[in-house]
Length: 231
Image (cartoon, rainbow, N blue to C red; front, side, top):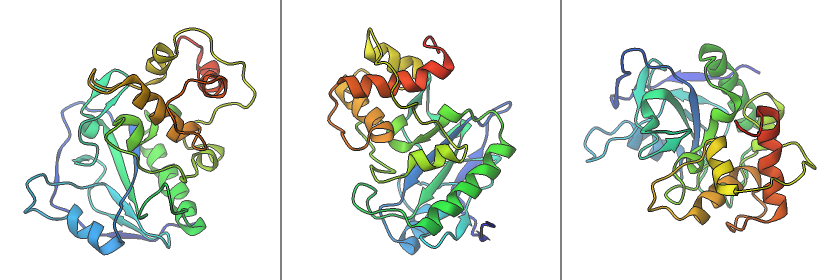
């Protein structure tokens, strides 16, 4: 599948820091229709200007707003694997969807997303599979996108991101410390339960309640085992 890519530059970007390595890919949903999203992501009059590298429409058409060698302003206050303020080391894709907890993502859109992500991963080999994340992963409690209906498992089957091995023995010990080893982090003001919910949104979307039950422990173990439990 070839992605129909349209250049539509946004002025909302900045240089990456000297020596910066792009090692995170962040997926979002727009929460607005295409044109409204494009307008906001290119608006220079807002108090807090925002942008993303790409916007992906329902039919699979992709709009390139910011070059990958520039910093787009999509992540906001964010944390992952001991780091914060992730705009400078990430690529952001806004996927057109009004609410990813309520609306499915069309097959054409996801097919194009797979191809778009594959190209990004080739150009930025430092992006490890566990660093393909949703906005909800890097901003627990504050963000919920790309939502519970986003097909993370399908992407992982295509080599984009990770998915837990089924039937893994549940993780023993401190679950919150294990979440930190995998990558999840947030300020102390964010309740630990909200970080568990962020994990569930990505890896157990059928139950997002913040409860650390055996299946949630099993899902995290299924991610950590291939990395080594002391990842």
